[in-house]
Image (cartoon, rainbow, N blue to C red; front, top):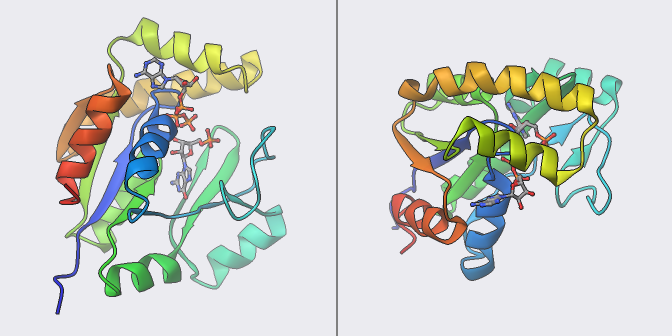
Length: 185
Ligand SMILES: Nc1ncnc2c1ncn2[C@@H]1O[C@H](COP(=O)(O)OP(=O)(O)OP(=O)(O)O)[C@@H](O)[C@H]1O
Ligand SMILES: Nc1nc2c(ncn2[C@@H]2O[C@H](COP(=O)(O)O)[C@@H](O)[C@H]2O)c(=O)[nH]1
């Protein structure tokens, strides 16, 4: 019987490059299963329901929370986000390496409920580069960027809570390091 893999959580400030790194990693290693979160945020152009997120209404999110269907959930910059519990547990049970890409509040909840999880913090090379990336992505209004940068200050201060920090200078390097941490390569 294969050993149950560890759950890996990837967190870090908005715009640091989490999705970019994960997409790069999964191009070469599609066997890594990335949890699809539920969110009340509106889809960005190109985002698809069930692929990037499950886009839900406030009422639907209320029900997911009330029914205990989320492993963790948090409010981030004006929207709610949560990880569907059942799919995560099923994939771990079947021996698949599982990755969650979630915020600091979610990472803290996972640490409480699944102590075997490894928590990885993705840090920017500098504050200026983080601002450049978040602004340069062009997906958020100036007001939302401001909220996300306020959250980023709190997230950066929480870095010591994580098991390991990777600095996202090179997408390729970080993707390789993450795969090694997940025992995939
Ligand atoms: N190593 C890198 N060097 C330069 N630009 C990068 C790097 N990694 C990511 N980027 C760019 O930074 C921007 C933000 O990346 P991405 O959307 O992956 O961030 P994120 O951490 O997933 O953000 P969020 O938490 O808001 O979803 C994108 O435009 C991406 O192309
Ligand atoms: N606690 C959770 N945080 C999540 C989840 N899914 C995504 N996120 C985090 O939210 C912010 C914003 O994401 P965006 O797609 O709107 O840019 C980012 O830090 C994500 O990692 C989740 O299920 N739970």
